[in-house]
Length: 106
Image (cartoon, rainbow, N blue to C red; front, side):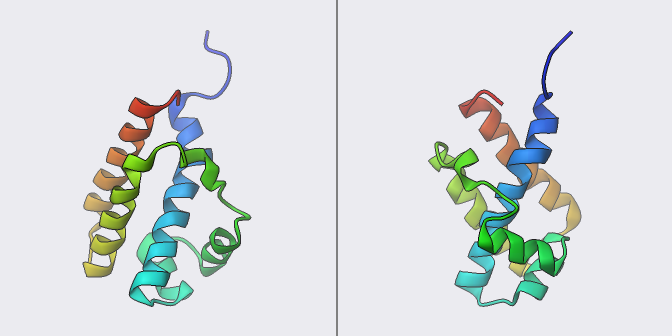
């Protein structure tokens, strides 16, 4: 029996919030969209975006040792602004998750 969180549990609790926080930051800073519009694109609430912006909801240190994923955040932000569909969003998030698993002990 495995003790502790399973990889996907850790991803949901620790990694997914960082992905959202980083992508939200890019969308707001580089594309000039509001927190409300950014929330719509990411499928979260405006309050979540506010918490990401202040660091209350995501600990970005969880991915700071993985600089290779930074370009994936840029791609995801760009595609969301362009009109990314739900299926493609899942594919990008799974790709980032896979990269995290390859590079660390998730």
